[in-house]
Length: 585
Image (tube, rainbow, N blue to C red; front, top):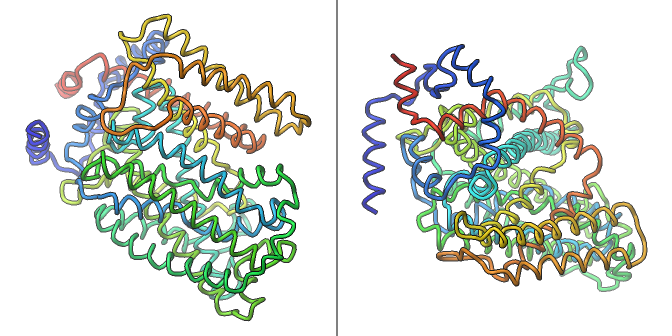
């Protein structure tokens, strides 16, 4: 506690000497490698040995919790409780997707068994939540998965994963802005492009300019910049509206239900249920943005597990009830795939209820934007604290206690994308990185439990790596077999047995670190199953998603080799204050 007060005092003294709004080169590139052309040229000539040094170099809990935070100069305010985290997660996850995806998958994917698809995806999401919760308790910092991966898997993997998920988060925010504009236009004029400006000279897919989408993003991110607690209260109020509408939908659905509509329950077989589970999984994403709020929680050891695990459990139940209510209210063959709930209410004589669905969808997108802007900015802040991007973006404003510079960065980029890019183009960017990071976090948790530097013997490390490889390879094998349409049970049995052997092998190895306060139960079984589930879902994304991930990773790799590598190397091997002094002489 005394150290925390001293750190806050140092931060206050520093902030009094330096203005928050400053634009010197030293504020963006304080590292020695960027002080002059000759130092940069020298750094480039040492790229190979520096890359070898940083490739597997890992951060530490102490660095992320103390030294990295000092880069922000002012502390973020600890103002969130488990109640705030629970509703922030609810607001981030429960958007418009459930109203669209449920009808599509009930009609064309799984039939009434779509409720099982939601249950399967909910369990998979809950496994990832458990992994995030343990890390959030142990390392309660703003960066979430970026910090977790940096501590356990190293700088390089953390940067590649974080860069991709940050890109997808900004593209996702742009897509939400465009969707918000479309929903509002449909309610006002029944024309989704009503508020957009057509420019014939622009390429198709970029020729409908959307000022409403930009305005929505600016307002949402502007609110997020004014204060975390204020944003949390606004999210709570609007989420309560969503809960009331969802309760209405479920109650009316069951009131007008017919059990005969559930027959046949598996019209598309088990494969349809599993394939639909991969699709509806996207309705559960967004909790990872809330995990980025760990630094602002009052008591991380209590608030994070209750907030994250509690919210995901609640959301899973809500989704299953909504899916069951729809399929009992309307025969799956008669469900409108494009507007399932609105048409279902019309069929029972409640045409006015479609406006409730529209309002709920708009509200869901709004809270997703609010919480997303909080999470994205804090993710960016932690990346900047590591100097992988300019540390200017890590600064926290002394009055608001929020990272305004980082918020402005993600706001401007998301707004530009949403202004020009159509939903068709944005929807082609699948969330590969989200699942990829969920899988890596589960791997990182296993590494954390079984490998401690200078403690785990070399033979123990080799055994751990061998069993981990078996788990990952068998999981990829199951995904490849399923998506290739391989029939029969022998191949699946073989890969399943290999997965079991790999997990059992880990279970028999000694653990060299145990959680201090709260941890994932049944390790290594639950993290291993999370790895398998996420790799299985990654396999369902298709060729385009893999290609996009590879292209984006190559671009990020170029940035890392020319900028990020040298900045982080300097921070690790040369005192930063010395670099600043030499640059200012």
